[in-house]
Image (tube, rainbow, N blue to C red; front, side, top):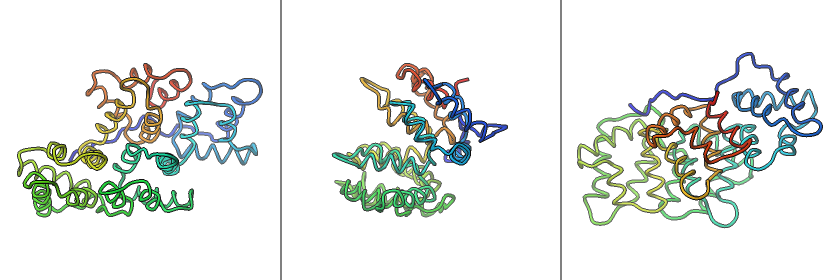
Amino acid sequence: MSWYYTPKPTVVPAEGFDASADANALRAAMKGFGTDEQAIIDILCARSNGQRMQILETYSSELGRDLIEDLKSELGGKFEDVIVALMMPPEKYLCKQLHKAMDGMGTNEDALIEILAPQTNEEVKKIVDCYEDMYNRPLAEHLCSETDGSFRRLLTMIIVGARDPQGTVDADLAVEQANQLYNAGEAKLGTDEEVFYKILAHASFDQLEIVFDEYKKLSGRTIEQAMKDELSGELYDALSAIVECVQMAPHYFAKRLHKAMDGAGTDDASMIRIIVTRSELDLQNIKDEYEQMYNKTLLSAVRGECSGEYKHALCALLGEA
């Protein structure tokens, strides 16, 4: 199954890791007049998140200082955003990104979809617990206050952990679910959105892959083609993100990165979020997919969009030698 593509990271734990040596090297890079940004990139972009957390603790215990505060005082702009993102556990960083997407005027629905659609139940539970710890407010309550309609119901199902565990597969049920989707959309006038979001939020990714195959046998069209005709707005965006993540998550993230860099201006927040959070998962797969889809390397695209230390940090995470 394509769900079981072999994930290839671009950032792996450094061999011969020494948290004390790294902590002291970082302090030296920030001490006195001027900052050695390249030294910071060479260390933090070449360590796993677990190793960075050890550096954080060692910096505090051996030097009596807060590494994140020191980094914030020495760095600035988007370069600071990348480095500070690297210094948080993944779920904490994603919680900050979710909060930012909902805070203030307006809601960044694209960010909510990108963060929540690919997550398994286990990953969602970490995010939900962490969010309440950080903001003293349940994530579900905050999401419900910022979204509405079928989109709100879909996101709520995702974050309450309604999805079956990975590996849960029932071939007979898949035929039935494909029929339900067909009858809720193509086979009738109007669309029963509830059937779509209930199946796509409940079934395991493994099960959904079989459902989509069965749908094509039944309808002669792909589930994506059907959804494009039957759904719209944020619900369509969220459900199509789930479909893409089921079939090939790197394809979805390659598309998101291309969109972030396409046209006038750059969506730096999305670019940083994807490159940082996928670097230890499947960023190499995303790079390969990007090159196949757009006939240029992701590295060259990032080089063309970014500048300075910000560019150097992202390129280091992308595995530039």
